[in-house]
Amino acid sequence: MASARTCAPDKAAVVVECVPAEQDQVTADKMCVRPSRRSLLGLDWFVFCLADVQTGFGPFVSVYLTAEKWTQGDIGLVLSVAGIIGLIGRVPGGAVVDAVRSERNAAMVAAIGIGASALMMALWPLFPFVLFASVLSAAANCVLNPAIAAISLGLVGYHAIGPRLGRNARFASLGTGVAAAGMGACGYLFSSRAVFFVTAALLIPTLIALSNIRAAEIDPVRAHSGVAPHDEFGPGLRRLLTNWPLIAFAGATALFQFANAAMLPLMGSVMTMRSANWAEILIAACIIVPQLVVALCSPWIGRQAERWGRRPLLLLGFAALPLRCLLFADIPDPYLIVFVQVLDGISAAALGVLVPLIAADLARNTGHYNLTQGIIGTGVGVGASISTTFAGYISDHYGSHAAFLGLGMVATCALLFTLVAMPETRPDRAPVAP
Image (cartoon, rainbow, N blue to C red):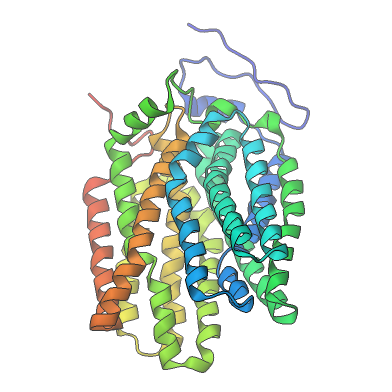
């Protein structure tokens, strides 16, 4: 019997004696993990401010470069290169976070990279600088998302990770909504370039919030889902690629994004043709409504995932998508589409919480939590990259109604695949291997 160990002291945290190593890890988490209020609030505001910073590299890039007299070909090239980096960089980005021993430092460096990219884009809107800034921002995002999940797991432990991820999703959604409204107003009142100065300036409160997360309260072993085996990147990746639930989940999320990514851009085109004067306002409403739903529902989903398990909520999120596709295809009034976007919020809330949560389940005791997130993220990126091309081709040749129905068929396949292939992953309900 191993002797009991004692947690590292911390003045701001309540610390008690840990249970022996042989006892259940969840029980150990409940007894040992007591992050301070300062660290938890620091994580809240770091997620919120970081969403503000990341929003600056959304649709505002195209608006800014168009105002700078760039050709659509050059804009498309920059966005495509950034998209490719964002796709192929997810697995290496997760591996980097697994390799470092300070997730907080990794998040800090990546956040500085995004802020520097925004400043570079604002100061020098020339092709080489903008291309480099876009690549740097995309690479930084490949590190930031797994780092946030790792910090969360390292702070609160397995027993509280579901509600914590729900809280993260709420603050990210609020940050995105506030930033979109503020940057839109800034661009309207001043100039599209001002958006990127604001993005760079937001780096300051982001780093202040991050500094409030106490490094001593982030358990590095738990943040990586256990102690990493003594091997290189290649063997660890090969082991994950033979994990069937992980491959099934990556495939399911790829199918989901295949059906989902093109939905709003396609509906934007339809709205422009039906109601050109109100198209921009309607699209803005279609973006804001899901963010509000995510902010309201995400903490509830995180709590219920611990009570019901992951699978019922995952199926709920997947089931909302084919219904949304069908309604988009058959509702003629563009104003009613805004209400249909509630379904998008349900899906976004479910996947926003469950993707990192299921990754934590699947990576448990492997030391490869962030690499696991990278593999799932690659599936998401592949599905999203195919979606717009598929929907555009169907819409051009057969009309938008057929495109929505085609996306709905893919969404139905995603739901059925998840129903058949994806097991429950909550540790106390997951099937035990013989």
